[in-house]
Image (tube, rainbow, N blue to C red; front, top):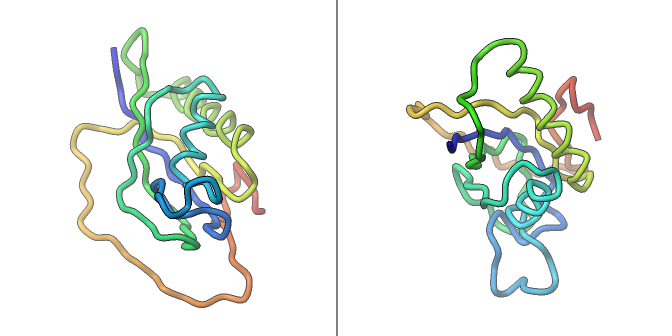
Length: 140
């Protein structure tokens, strides 16, 4: 049985060629997608590729990029405290496998119907980039 997880991801894009691999960056900078995919594999979550709600260019930071991944389960996920703890453990395992400039803020079960009425892009120049803060992850 396959099911989808929704990951809320925050990253500093300085050391990445953007969300997806770029031929111009081959061998010099990894993509955020490649980095997350390797962490998903190391953490034993899935071998599949993460799919983002949008793409970002080289050097762009994200406070909350929405990403889905397909995982295999032996039984359907049953909502409740046990499932919440399982999802929190997945986020923790991923953060342990990720570099410090990429964080999974939260893992959720992705439902078939996802309503995304709007997407907000915020272009700001900052002297110091910052990752989003989440109490379970902490700030970097």
